[in-house]
Length: 128
Image 1 (cartoon, helix red, strand yellow):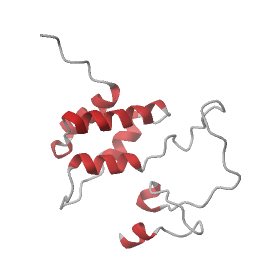
Image 2 (cartoon, one colour; image 1 turned 60 degrees about the vertical axis):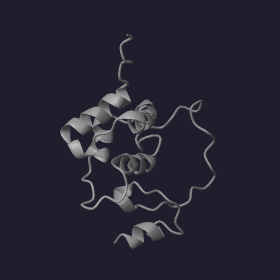
Image 3 (cartoon, rainbow, N blue to C red; image 1 turned 120 degrees about the vertical axis):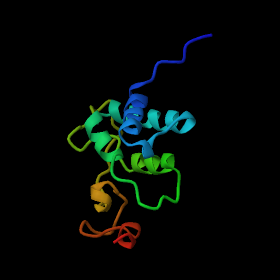
Image 4 (cartoon, one colour; image 1 turned 90 degrees about the horizontal axis):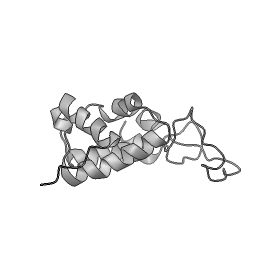
């Protein structure tokens, strides 16, 4: 019988998260899907520690979705590159001429467009 494939770096990060906080353990397709997103973020310059910090935020007391969905939503809010990392011109698409202000809700991770820099999007405003 062939041995199972070796876990990827993204899988290892998520498996470690599940070992430290059993409520956040993933397996099967959710693990594979979220590991692929983690690997993309790691390739974009994010560190394991930064991603672990983002993902290990406490879960809500009442969870209305699966843990896989909660972690997926957290990962979707993470920009492809950390703000200190600037992709090389060959990596990046041309920058727009004028960037729209972004919502700074959810500890600066929301990033939805807002009318002015000092405003929150409606979803983050509703969470206050």
